[in-house]
Length: 249
Ligand SMILES: [Zn+2]
Image 1 (tube, rainbow, N blue to C red):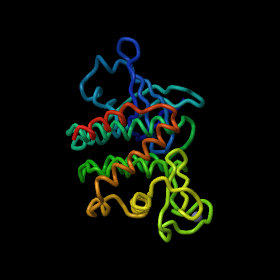
Image 2 (cartoon, rainbow, N blue to C red):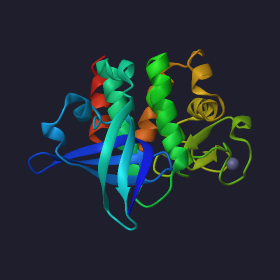
Image 3 (spheres, rainbow, N blue to C red):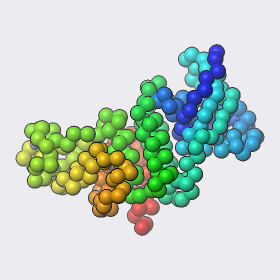
């Protein structure tokens, strides 16, 4: 057994027994691990804050090979992303990003890129504020990193650049794209595909300075949600809450 020091983002916390907590953390190495925090609910506020979801934390823990749960010796908060969590909308977006990452990445699989994506997203939204672009951008980048969503925008049949075609369609259950010459186009998605391409190749900070119609962003978000729902087999609570909120605007 050895003492290890790591940094990670809190994905989930669960109370265990009288005073202990189980904390699920996505480590900077990209591994998702479970940690046991003994006596935390009886202890000081600083430590209670340390297990709040979406916090970037620093941990010293007892490492042992092939263990399912590691015991924490020390825990501290590196960044709470307080600005982001201070608004209701920001809080909901944060929850949604965390829930997506937690549900999509399995244990025992190194996902360093996903840690970097999540870390960068929390950092950017904390600094720059949220916009209607924030969540669809994150969802698309996450699904691309996991290999589900396309980075090349071409017809799956003729392999031609989709933007040279008059019309195109993207299936929300598979992200397969077809042009009007090769298959049916129940709805023309060229505008949405163009937004997806921008989100793939332009960084967030630059993209929020451009004008993208909110209607297009909502349509893209709907397609992304349908894929996520289909892929996981259930609806994410945080996403359902956000779409209810959008409808009430
Ligand atoms: Zn085609």
